[in-house]
Amino acid sequence: METLLALTVIFLLFEIPACIGMGLIFKKMKLGFKKGIIPFYNKIVLINKYKLKQYNIILVFIPILGFITNYQIYKCLGKEYNKDMIYILELTFLSFIFNIFLGLEIKEPEEQKQEKEQKETKVVTDDFMWYPKQKVKSDTIYKASRNKMSAKVDLKVNKNNEIINNKKQTKTREIENPKICPNCGTKQSSNAEACYICGTKL
Image 1: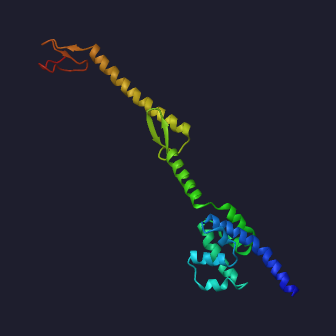
Image 2: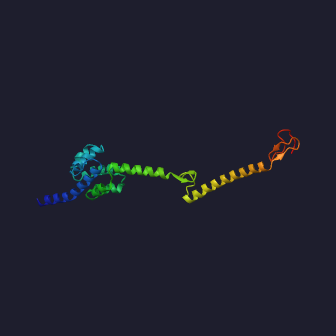
Image 3: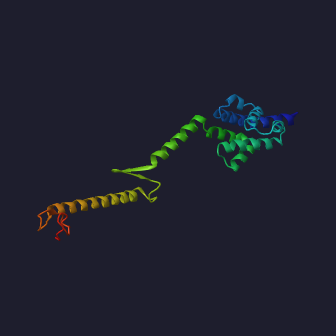
């Protein structure tokens, strides 16, 4: 009688925190906190949710073999929340501790959705760096720091401006120093070699 009582107390000491943790997990998974805190029933719910083989429902009630079912349940649960194998084994054998940790750690579907949207928005926002009159895609140019990229853009802009200024200066010189054909008196460009009217060499 005393042995049975001692086993019952030990079972409750381990099972109560495990069930509270499972209740938190169920709440985050939108399965209901009350379903999660019911011993054995919470595991049956997860067996059906993850479509595990039905013989696992029987194994849940067998003390030692129950660890096989626990492992399969926590393996599916761990994969859903990106947990490694060590964490899954800790959930299997120390569920009275790690159930609570997992229940507090994981986020509700709405929170996960918001977090995902924020990450996607950040990627779109950070995808481009803006400079005066120019848009430069950050993941396609040099993979360097912002300062180096800015210097490269400034160099390109300066080169373009220099080409434009040279063209303007050439055109200005042509207008200021025109050639005049000695034969017909027609105005020619400064670099003309022959008159475009009469063909006289200049």
